[in-house]
Amino acid sequence: MAAVPPRLTNVEAQRVMAVLSDALSKLDLLSRVPQCRLPHSESMRDSLGVDVTQLLDEHVALERQYVAVTATPEGCLGGTLPDLETADDELRHSTRVVCRLLREAPGIVTQLQAARATEAGGGEAIVSETMSRFLSALHALQEQAGARLSTTVEEDKEGRETFEEVKARDEKAGQQVKQLQKELRAEQASREADVSSRDAVLRKLRATLDTITNTAADEVKAIEEEGKAQEQADHATGAEREAALRAELARLKGELGSRRKEHRESEEALRKKKARCEGEVEQWIAKYDAEVGERYEELKALKAIYAEETAQLAELEAHFARLAAEREAELEAERRVAEELARQQAQERALHDGAARIQAVFRGKTERRLLEKRKAGKGGKGKKK
Image (cartoon, rainbow, N blue to C red; front, side, top):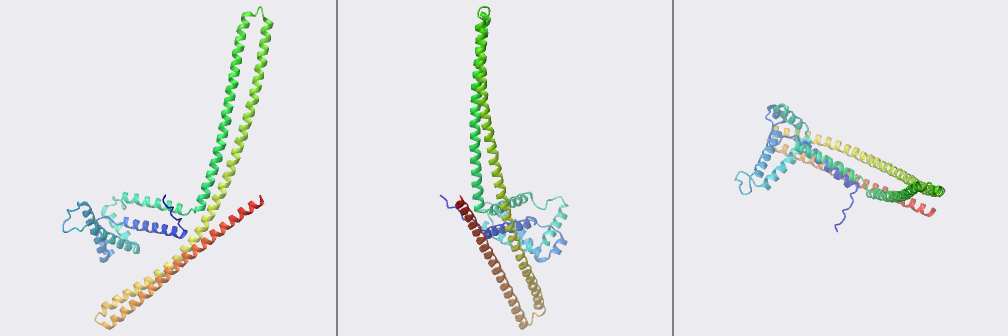
């Protein structure tokens, strides 16, 4: 028997959702880049710059190379084409670089789409149908994973147990109703058979009376009166039995309705409890996201300062290339800036890890308190009984 995998914690679930969101955002950016070709727009290439254009051209060349390698049978590759593993590694590395570039500069995607639409005359779709279906499938997977990870083991188990209990009671009540209906049908069939038998007897007696009317009028009259009395008695007995069975059936239906109402009220209370817990989790997540956003803005400002200082350093190197002593001093300054940025990033990671541990400890304490309260409540009810 295979081992049951451990249940994910809230932090691990958030990490899973973060990985899915990051993958979706990267795939959405890559889907905007034309496959195996770039628009031949001079204005677009001038606006993107030489470095970006060269990087995109190299990525397109690697895509074409990979298509050619996969389309060529193994063993028939010429000297100009690498093997499949090398082509795959090169394309993977280039894809990561392009994705990182597009995330840092989203304006590149807009310019590529505008140039592609201009070149195609507005008749070509920006994103292929296959890629759209793939992105839709990933979105559906993200929603399903979020819904599954947001449900705790206790809630899932409690819901299943409640459903099984309601189902068992409903099946038992249904079986009782079916049994009573079966008995009622049998009683009705028996009564109808009795009535039919009595009717047959009466018809036979009447036929006999027709033949002996002149000789046995008093005897025929007595027989008819006896038959009517017996029939009335049978009708009365059958009616009483039918009324009793109908009353029992109505009682069981009322009991079934009341039990269903109780189960609906219990289910509504559980749903409200679940919604309340989800609201609390969303508040904690929102608070965490706000703190992370603040840290991100600080990191972004430091990156901007670092980029500005790097640009200034490049200008000084170009202008004072012959001054070796000043160049060494500038390199030392750049090294100090890099160390400061690395130190701040390490502090940032430590803050993130500490916040995640604090949230995990707090949620664990909260869950234990809730469990202790539930156990204490159940113990108190048991003592009162």
